[in-house]
Image 1 (cartoon, rainbow, N blue to C red):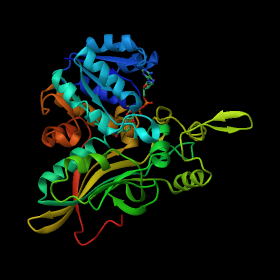
Image 2: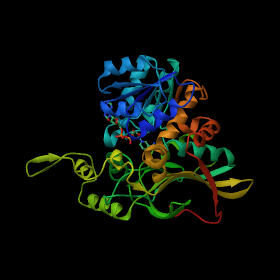
Image 3: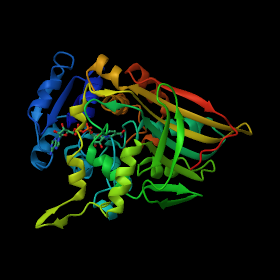
Image 4: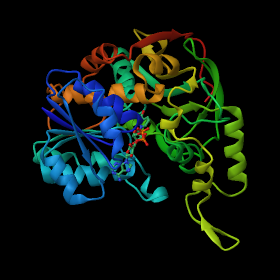
Length: 401
Ligand SMILES: NC(=O)c1ccc[n+]([C@@H]2O[C@H](COP(=O)([O-])OP(=O)(O)OC[C@H]3O[C@@H](n4cnc5c(N)ncnc54)[C@H](O)[C@@H]3O)[C@@H](O)[C@H]2O)c1
């Protein structure tokens, strides 16, 4: 099989290297607007498996031509282009995988999870498969939710908890993934949440509590922000009495306070403002002060844990089970020469792609991670360097959401 890795950034490098390691994949075409990235990463793939291509995703003709020459595309670009790439896949006859959604359309003008899932019938008719939102979170977090859901008799609450205790050399604050996405998620998008059986929207950073992540991450303060899982888990895992679904991420206290101050100044939007004759977006100003994720490779020290907590019952007894994946930034760099978040996101995306290549998917159509069989995915993750764990938390405690 031939695979196109579209976007060879921090995540795309890891995904490309991982899919190239399986015998079913003969070639990986590394495509990026940047001329040098594909060449640098090509040298890290098994001999004879890499091809390189300079491509701007906005050049529709070149995109369709590149897609027509492969069986599967792994989209590692910003999620705003997902619908365009999916449409091009339908034209070229190519299977599809991405790692996150954009949207919501009414706030940022780009497609959310619903618009990607709505293409399912078109993919089915074309005999194609699309796996959408397959990173670590969303992605593995949703597969963990599904695996736990299958173990429980009743599931009342599903909560994704993401905590990173790392610091970065030479910078006060360093988002471990795209700074624009980070600011949008934490400040601009009103987080979806499933509360008392209804899908609602909250204000971001309106809730926080302390959560003790498995070692070596430890206790961190987590905050509510917008994420795909709060929509996906109720959509696919609601039949065992689900009442609440949420996403919380640990934020450095100084960073959380800065974002809250930015909001108090009226900058929690993505529109241009005018100041002394200049027009600019406060979002871009804030992002311009933050390092890019690729610039932090080798400079992050600490570990990140992403997991899903299911609270419900098994055999009439209350159970609170957290299924998680921990990646050390230091180890990711020492062993693989990449940043921890790139590793932790890229491996699950590759596991989804490998399942697709092996025909271990539900068939044709567009599928969220909750809809696939969790067993092969959970078997592939540790094989490709992303082991997961499970812990039962005290049954008599509650999350203070
Ligand atoms: N689900 C998750 O857990 C998770 C976590 C982190 C990132 N992500 C997603 O993964 C994706 C990639 O993240 P990343 O950290 O690797 O980003 P990155 O910025 O490191 O990489 C993006 C790559 O796209 C290339 N690119 C930019 N514009 C292009 C264009 N017009 N045409 C072709 N190539 C272009 C860039 O040169 C870069 O190499 C994003 O969609 C992000 O939202 C998902």
